[in-house]
Amino acid sequence: MPDTTETETAILTDDRERVRYITLNRPERRNALTMAQLGQFFDTLADADAAPDVGAIVVQGAGGAFCSGIDLDPDEIDLDYDSRSFEQELALVEPFRRFEEMWRLRTPVIASVQGYCLAVGTDIAFHADMTVCSDDAQFGYPIVRSMASPSTHMWTYLAGPQWAKRLLLTGDMIDGATAARTGFVLEAVPADELAEHTHALARRVATVPGDISSANKAICNKVLELMGYTLAQEMAREHNVIAHQSPAAQEFGRIIRTEGFKAALAWQAEQFG
Image 1 (cartoon, rainbow, N blue to C red):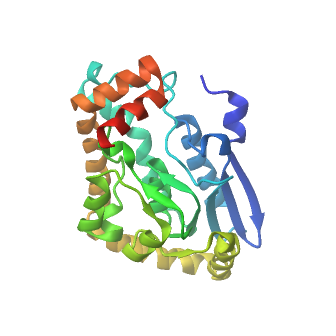
Image 2 (cartoon, rainbow, N blue to C red; image 1 turned 120 degrees about the horizontal axis):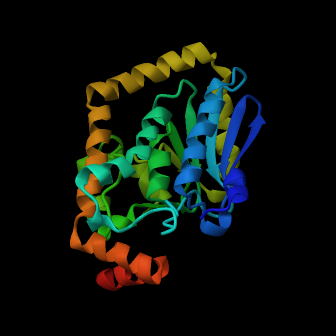
């Protein structure tokens, strides 16, 4: 089971000039989060949103990566997909509904991405109001190759159907410069400029009075609601469960349970060369 002390230190916070920094702090795991730590992340966002002296929130990762996904610890996540009904599987992905809470925060959220931004890392980055990245960051959802469909869906909203399909039908990764060009992120900058650039943007956002910025954020989000945002997230969770029923996903889960995650990745890599 995950260590309680590690869970408590997996998410760090720091305030600077009305900007609340939330740092994913598992650099030894490329900031992969357990399900418990993902819940802690959402709670930390809610605390920042409730703070009257916070005008902007920045989410970042410690070390060389932003977030490499969910930590698939068999002791925490039951990967025996074929042993559960559709409704039972759907209940297991219910925690991902909390990304809708992130989307509806009053306070603007900026993601600052370097290194790997994979799987649930993309869920975090794409649910921020703006994402700035290093030009050599790596975005992708590689487990679509053999395990799952994303449990949230901002892909088509951000970049349109062709680029969404380009990544979700291959599991390939793109660099930060390509992510900016295609619309997945706001902009890409040299890696050594990312922190300063992000803070300058966050300070600009935090300068606007909170009641005004929240109103302007809300109208942008309401337009996406007219485009079906909430229904799209519901369907994403359902399709995540549907993908788990495939023989490939069941084999991937079996290998993780019996041989470990590295062996499962090696099996997946063998299929794709």
